[in-house]
Length: 133
Image (cartoon, rainbow, N blue to C red; front, side, top):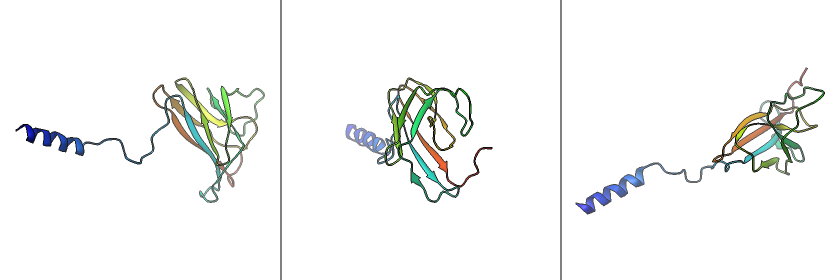
Protein backbone atom coordinates (compact mmCIF):
# COMPACT_ATOMS: atom_id res chain seq x y z
CA UNK A 1 0.00 0.00 0.00
CA UNK A 2 2.89 2.39 0.73
CA UNK A 3 4.31 1.75 -2.71
CA UNK A 4 0.92 2.54 -4.30
CA UNK A 5 0.65 5.78 -2.29
CA UNK A 6 4.17 6.81 -3.27
CA UNK A 7 3.46 6.10 -6.96
CA UNK A 8 0.23 8.15 -6.79
CA UNK A 9 2.00 11.10 -5.14
CA UNK A 10 4.72 11.06 -7.81
CA UNK A 11 2.12 10.79 -10.59
CA UNK A 12 0.13 13.73 -9.22
CA UNK A 13 3.29 15.79 -8.79
CA UNK A 14 4.23 15.13 -12.41
CA UNK A 15 0.80 16.31 -13.59
CA UNK A 16 0.65 19.48 -11.51
CA UNK A 17 1.47 22.74 -13.24
CA UNK A 18 4.96 23.96 -12.50
CA UNK A 19 7.01 26.78 -13.89
CA UNK A 20 6.73 27.08 -17.66
CA UNK A 21 9.81 25.60 -19.28
CA UNK A 22 11.43 28.02 -21.67
CA UNK A 23 8.84 30.71 -20.89
CA UNK A 24 9.96 34.23 -20.18
CA UNK A 25 10.38 35.07 -16.56
CA UNK A 26 9.66 38.59 -15.44
CA UNK A 27 12.36 40.89 -14.17
CA UNK A 28 13.37 40.79 -10.53
CA UNK A 29 11.95 43.19 -7.98
CA UNK A 30 12.92 46.83 -8.48
CA UNK A 31 13.89 46.31 -12.14
CA UNK A 32 12.30 47.68 -15.31
CA UNK A 33 13.53 46.37 -18.64
CA UNK A 34 12.35 47.68 -21.95
CA UNK A 35 12.96 48.40 -25.58
CA UNK A 36 12.44 51.45 -27.79
CA UNK A 37 11.59 50.75 -31.43
CA UNK A 38 10.40 52.75 -34.40
CA UNK A 39 7.88 51.37 -36.86
CA UNK A 40 5.21 52.35 -39.36
CA UNK A 41 1.56 52.42 -38.23
CA UNK A 42 0.96 49.01 -39.83
CA UNK A 43 3.79 47.46 -37.75
CA UNK A 44 6.22 47.24 -40.67
CA UNK A 45 9.76 48.60 -40.82
CA UNK A 46 10.36 47.91 -37.11
CA UNK A 47 13.84 48.94 -36.01
CA UNK A 48 15.54 49.56 -32.67
CA UNK A 49 16.23 53.14 -31.61
CA UNK A 50 19.73 53.45 -30.15
CA UNK A 51 21.21 56.27 -28.09
CA UNK A 52 17.91 57.71 -26.84
CA UNK A 53 17.54 58.89 -23.24
CA UNK A 54 14.70 57.14 -21.39
CA UNK A 55 13.38 58.35 -18.05
CA UNK A 56 11.44 57.08 -15.06
CA UNK A 57 8.84 59.62 -13.91
CA UNK A 58 6.38 59.75 -11.02
CA UNK A 59 3.79 61.54 -13.18
CA UNK A 60 2.70 61.20 -16.79
CA UNK A 61 4.63 63.12 -19.41
CA UNK A 62 2.48 64.04 -22.42
CA UNK A 63 4.28 63.28 -25.70
CA UNK A 64 4.94 66.25 -27.94
CA UNK A 65 3.54 68.72 -25.39
CA UNK A 66 5.81 71.69 -24.85
CA UNK A 67 5.70 72.78 -21.25
CA UNK A 68 7.78 75.42 -19.54
CA UNK A 69 8.85 73.29 -16.57
CA UNK A 70 8.62 69.61 -17.51
CA UNK A 71 8.77 67.10 -14.66
CA UNK A 72 12.22 65.79 -13.91
CA UNK A 73 12.80 62.06 -14.17
CA UNK A 74 13.92 60.29 -11.01
CA UNK A 75 16.51 58.42 -13.08
CA UNK A 76 17.53 58.07 -16.72
CA UNK A 77 19.40 55.68 -18.95
CA UNK A 78 20.24 55.48 -22.65
CA UNK A 79 19.06 52.80 -25.08
CA UNK A 80 21.70 50.39 -26.38
CA UNK A 81 22.32 49.54 -30.04
CA UNK A 82 19.37 47.09 -30.00
CA UNK A 83 17.04 49.66 -28.39
CA UNK A 84 17.01 47.98 -24.98
CA UNK A 85 17.24 49.74 -21.64
CA UNK A 86 17.25 48.70 -17.98
CA UNK A 87 16.50 50.48 -14.73
CA UNK A 88 17.65 48.81 -11.51
CA UNK A 89 17.11 49.42 -7.79
CA UNK A 90 13.75 51.20 -8.15
CA UNK A 91 11.72 51.43 -4.97
CA UNK A 92 8.33 49.69 -5.08
CA UNK A 93 5.81 51.97 -6.73
CA UNK A 94 4.08 53.07 -9.91
CA UNK A 95 6.25 54.73 -12.55
CA UNK A 96 5.78 56.34 -15.97
CA UNK A 97 8.43 55.30 -18.52
CA UNK A 98 9.04 57.47 -21.60
CA UNK A 99 11.58 59.56 -23.49
CA UNK A 100 13.63 61.90 -21.29
CA UNK A 101 14.59 65.25 -22.74
CA UNK A 102 14.60 65.76 -26.50
CA UNK A 103 13.51 62.85 -28.64
CA UNK A 104 10.73 61.39 -30.73
CA UNK A 105 7.13 61.89 -29.69
CA UNK A 106 5.96 58.60 -28.19
CA UNK A 107 3.33 57.50 -25.73
CA UNK A 108 4.86 56.45 -22.43
CA UNK A 109 3.62 53.60 -20.26
CA UNK A 110 2.80 53.15 -16.58
CA UNK A 111 4.47 50.22 -14.83
CA UNK A 112 4.25 48.84 -11.31
CA UNK A 113 7.38 47.66 -9.52
CA UNK A 114 7.26 45.68 -6.29
CA UNK A 115 9.93 44.26 -4.01
CA UNK A 116 9.33 40.86 -5.62
CA UNK A 117 8.72 41.67 -9.27
CA UNK A 118 9.74 44.21 -11.85
CA UNK A 119 8.16 45.20 -15.14
CA UNK A 120 8.76 45.15 -18.88
CA UNK A 121 7.79 47.86 -21.33
CA UNK A 122 7.86 48.38 -25.11
CA UNK A 123 8.03 52.00 -26.26
CA UNK A 124 7.10 52.54 -29.90
CA UNK A 125 7.78 55.53 -32.12
CA UNK A 126 5.34 55.66 -35.02
CA UNK A 127 7.11 56.79 -38.18
CA UNK A 128 4.04 57.75 -40.24
CA UNK A 129 1.47 58.76 -37.64
CA UNK A 130 0.27 62.36 -37.55
CA UNK A 131 2.17 64.40 -34.97
CA UNK A 132 0.62 66.18 -32.02
CA UNK A 133 -1.35 69.31 -32.84
